[in-house]
Image 1 (cartoon, one colour):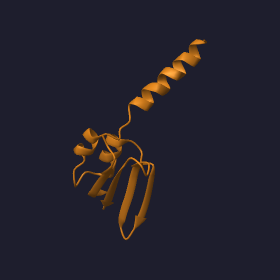
Image 2: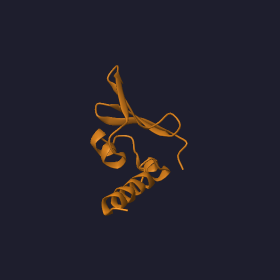
Image 3: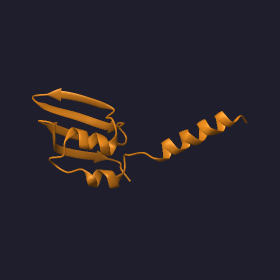
Image 4: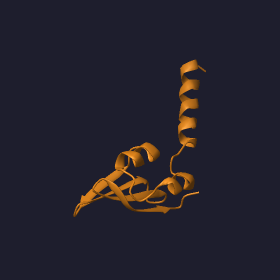
Length: 84
């Protein structure tokens, strides 16, 4: 196999094994954290919506996720689903 293919497969395996959607990262979330602090911890959110001055962002999918509600760029509430 060419070296580049082996390198690409190795990188893909590492990325898949290094999900930031873990119970450990979820327990690091705290009310009052800024949006930037959460992005630094979890990475860029998969989706966000905004209504009535509250931004709702989700990391992950419907099956496994962390959802964080921000008001004035600060964590207000957060929940998780199917984390290990």
